[in-house]
Image (tube, rainbow, N blue to C red; front, side, top):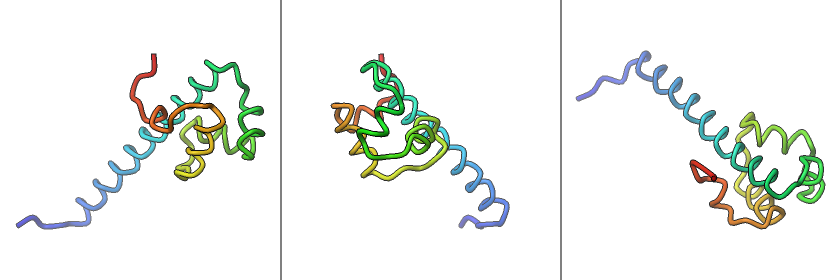
Length: 91
């Protein structure tokens, strides 16, 4: 039987926050790369997706944990499948 201590909880929380940031950053990097391949500015993507410039920028930088619906809208504007945002390495 494992004892669930405060230290264990703290370690899991720390790992979870780091993993969440890495995951969000990878998605954001993929979105930025796709946007750049389509020669689209952040401002154009924001306008066409009806988001603010700041929101799109923060998504690309992995600063916010965005909704699935926002990712869906971005995928439609960029004309890609939403799963393309989740690929580890875009070439």
